[in-house]
Length: 268
Image 1 (cartoon, helix red, strand yellow):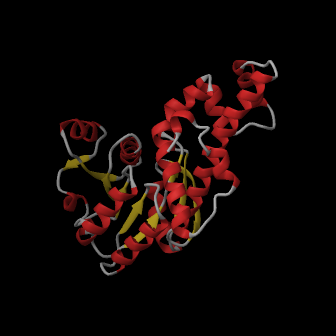
Image 2: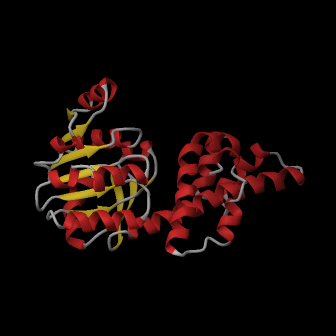
Image 3: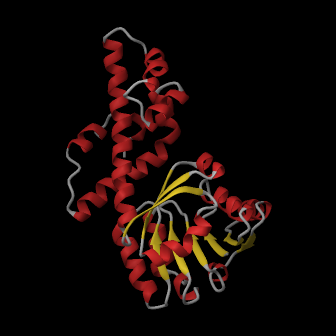
């Protein structure tokens, strides 16, 4: 497939590598000499005009950092108008489901289909081809984009209509942040009971309290070290969770209490 790609950063660049390795033709937007070199080394074509990545692409993928960036690219910029009718736009950035719905509405006028496909996992998952995707969109669109997404993602979970991928991801992020908060409290409790953190982290991953958050903390050696490593991303995600829950009339309830201010450097 011919794939246009916007956002060749920490997550996007390994996706480009996997797409090229899967036999897809990739044209990626670059902003400087460093990103041009990275994209070219990955085997993709580097271009500087966002319209160039779209005009003959079967799929255009947007993998930038914030929801505001997605809105600028897809609602204010020329990207969608440059895409050919019958192509599909994939949104990997975690953000508001309302953003995905607005983009889908705009794209419909140009004959472009849209899927929101926020990710769960990191660059190591992309490299291994086992990134998790929560995909919102109609069945036809999801089936169309699946061959490209399979280059770096498994499972690809079709969870409902446009925007539903974001809703599922936001619940996931809330729970993940809350688990980090709970682990911090567990370490505190352990210390009060005379058990040090390293002992807990060597034992708990083998028990019923295990989770992906605990596995990450254990691998880093402490809650603080893990929080420092993922702080920028979890902080952004927690901010999005709180804002979108308010926007949609949802209540985080006890989840928000657990997240609280217990994440240290991960505080939003």
